Length: 306
Image (cartoon, rainbow, N blue to C red; front, side, top):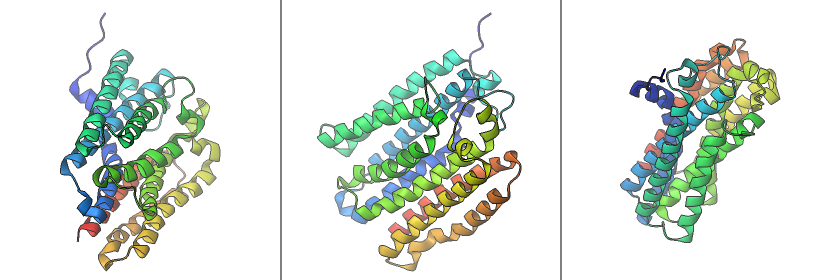
C-alpha cells in the first residue's frame, strides 16, 4: 500500500510559520543599523532577498528539526509541545528528507542571488558570505539530524546566538552598506542573539524531562530546572540591557528608547517563568518572547528612521 501524499497544509504546518517573526528580527535590526549609514546605499531589493533567504533557512531548520527528532524517536506520544507533522503521520520521512534537500538548494540559490544584488558576489567578501551561508545550511540541518547532532549536546543556544544574533544582524547590515559594522553595533546584534536564545531555552525547558529520558542533553537539561530558569532570566535581561547600553552611547532623541515600552511584558514573563511548576505552561511563553523580540526590532527600526 502506497503512502498518502502530504497535503499543502501539512507542509505549511511543518514549516511552523509562527517562528518567522523571530527569524526576521535579526534582518530588521540589521537593516535599522544600515540606516545609520544611509549614504552607503540601503537597497530594498537586498532587504527583500535577505528576508526570503532567512525564510528558506528557517523553514529548512524546522523541517530538519522535525526529521531529526522523529528518526531518533525523540518526538513521540510523551512529547509536551504541539504534535509534529512526522509524528502525526501527516508527512512521511522520505517526503520530508526530499523536501529538506530541495529547501537547502532553495536557500543556497536565494543566498547567491542576494549576494549578486548586494554587488559582492564575485569579491572575496562575497565568498566569505557564501561560506557562512553554507555553514548556516549545515547548522540548520545538523541541529537534530545526522550522527551526533549539536542540539543534542547542548550547543544549540550558542548556534542561535551566533546565527540569529551576530551574523544575522551584522551580516544583513553589511549587505546594505558594504562597510564593516562599528564595534558598538555588536550590542544590538547581541541583543537579538540573547533574546533568540531565550526562545530556544524556553522550548528546551518545556521538553527537558522528556529530552533527558531520550538522551537529548540540551542546555536546559544540563543546567537543571532551577538553574535553567536563572539562565533564562539572564538571557532576557542581557537582551534588553544590550540595547539600552547602545542607545545611551548613540543617543539622539527620546524616541531612541521606544523599545522600553515592551520591558514590562518581559518582566512579567520572567516572573511567570521563575514561578513555573508545570512545563506545559511554558508553551505560551514562547510566543511572548518571540513576538516581543520582533516588536523590539521594529521599534528599533522606527527609532532609526525618525
